[in-house]
Amino acid sequence: MDTDIGQDVISRHAKEITHLQKGAHVKFEYLRPLHAHHAIVTDINTDNHTFDCIHFTSGFTDAISKGDIPKTSIKTETVEFGKEGSYKNVLVVEYKMGIALSTMKLNRFPNRVAIAIAKHFEKNPDACQSFNLLTYNCEHFVFSCTTGYAICLQQLEPMMRLVKTMRSKDFLVDIADCIQKSMEKNRVQVVEYKEGMNYFTLISSKVKINLN
Image (cartoon, rainbow, N blue to C red):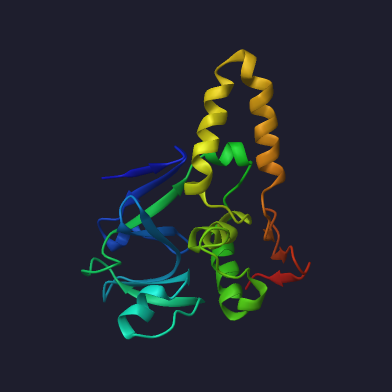
């Protein structure tokens, strides 16, 4: 069954590995609807039914199973499609213009750009924000790579729905505008990319990274 967060960011179950594509934003359902893990697909091997993805992980699950101390990392992992376990349920996150992206004024980067950003952060983890379950988790990381902004729609959705509801009432439109402007102002931009450019810019350092 498909899931819907924010109405314009739709998560559809990938029933076959051919439903995936390089640069896709995917999520794995662990404890639906309480928790889902987000990643970016970087390579697909249909012959052996596997795909590679880059994700930002707290390392908690692996550490517990091995009796180690959790260690955060941005890493590439090869996933066997459809295998029993944490990564069995793969959902492809599709971006559409609706309540969430329009409210936040976000645009989806081309897949090749999202992959390049994710790979850069994997090779240069110090250029990325530190992992924090509330302020910069796996979803913040993926949206940083796909839109340039560190957002978590699961956290923002209640406020976005409130803005939409308020806009349906004439006497609340001004208040809705104020809330939306506040949301826009508080967005944390991580990467800047404009269509047609052969590079992206890291906001924190102003460093330009060429697209390979």
